[in-house]
Image (cartoon, rainbow over all chains, first blue to last red; front, side, top):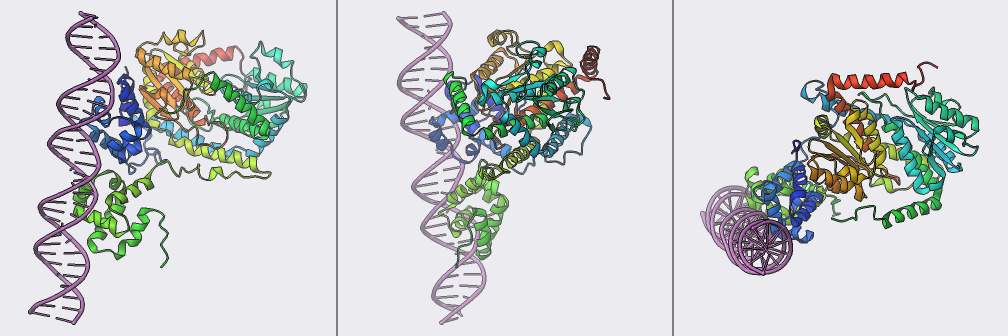
Length: 290
Length: 290
DNA sequence: TCGGCCATGAAACATTTGTTGCACGCATTG
DNA sequence: CAATGCGTGCAACAAATGTTTCATGGCCGA
């Protein structure tokens, strides 16, 4: 197995967890979930709340390499100490080379993306959401890396409008769907430089069919934004690194879904509840509480 | 005399400080300056470090209205508890109405997500990227809304490592792939509350097979984080709205891909160029300038 | 089926914890 | 000067803490 990144006692615990006896697993999970209480309250106290034997805590600590519960708790306490300023509070710009160059790359990227998000136009999103709300049917398009955003949008919208939403090209060649666009329907196209021919074709087809065209793109001059009723802009190139950033597009997509849901009112809420109930019945999710 | 707004035990202490005997003032200042140690270490321990008598701590507590040191410490502990007063949970609940309610919803959401991004651990990402770099093969898993993140990661990694990356379950039932995990390979599992059974199964299979397990999750106590060699945390619930936020997960995925690419050096760069050349030859993209 | 092993809970253990009683020092007051 | 009150350190106390031991019960291999 690869080196187990033993930065914090919590990760050591997590790594060792599966190989532990059942009772120690329970206690270990409890500690991981309540690590603040673990550092402040007493062992017996925790044991009572976790419904376990006090001895289990000592055994857990020893099982993952500490001399005892006191030792483990001391490690947890140190890991939680607030004075250690989070390594990325903004002034991490200093070192750009050396062994930490990769870290700097990531922090720069994250900061740039965080700065870009609030620049998204909330008004435009709300208007686009209204258009989606009014649409009889919603088509979604996104190729290559934008495919992921398209699929998330598809997923979330289908949670409360199952029959009226679909991704272009899921049931055959794209061209088949292109002929199905109708006035009163909405077509969402997601893309950024370099633009794919396919996405442009979809946009043009939507325009010619008289459908409402919503473009999520990185520029007003993007080819699929031509003739679009709504254009939602994000910054793809704002972040350093080699791949264009998609967080902006994703944030737009999620906001769009959230507002559209909100516009749907009680009807949408009921559909969502139905869907959730169905998932619960199929035991899709792991039951809460550990 | 009106009671002086006893918001926190720390402020009670500060207010009462001047009217206390000299020795208790010293101890009181020490507690105020080291309140984290006050909640975690023992009274005698603190006394030794402060150069004071242990009894002084008990007397201090009683002097400012507590039944004893234990009582004071309990108050300090509660005041420090991290879960409460998250910057967003408080005011996000105040649902605004009126014509701009939807706009407010979007801006709140975007701001919250922007604030969440820099909290991602860059170090953890770099370490996980190293693991990916060393892996002979990379499996990616994500169900439901996390599917989109999984597919983006798959897409970007395949740009420069085409034959070694794939999503679990693309070529048949998931179970087929679960048996294919091998030591030296890496398995990435993406998920957040509520966790799907399927993703947990994949994580467990990866662990049992001895593969390097990388979890992208919203909590250290997520079931698929158990036994993971690397855990990358994002905040799914931090944003208001109805769907959990995925921008954090997406940012992690993109950073992961970027760093992994960077580690790949010239070899990776060459693969990426090859891929781009092939796409250009297939005329996938719209030529620049329109 | 037996024997050994391991996980688990209860109880006994030594240690540490917070507290309190006591004596001393110092300042103030009659 | 003597008496009084308060602040302070020391040491002894009971309670609580973490640890260890032991007995029990279930599991797997021989």
